[in-house]
Amino acid sequence: MSREKSIKVRLSEYELQQLKQEAEKQGIGMSDFLRKYISKLPKPENFTAVKTA
Image 1 (cartoon, rainbow, N blue to C red):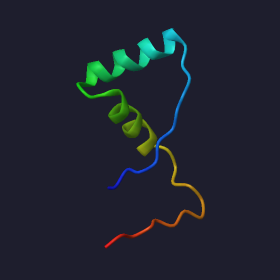
Image 2: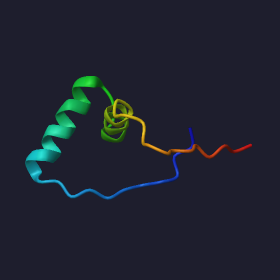
Image 3: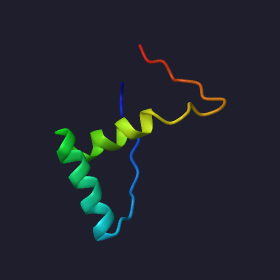
Image 4: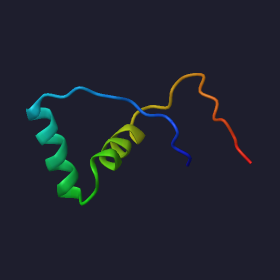
């Protein structure tokens, strides 16, 4: 899957440490941890995937 979008999120030091800790427990990076969490959310309504050749 092509990943061309990015977001910037402001976190407190505590939230950042929570994120780092959980990602480390799973042996993955913070971005992968967040993608894994997001993948469990419901599919957006009216979402049409863009197909590339």
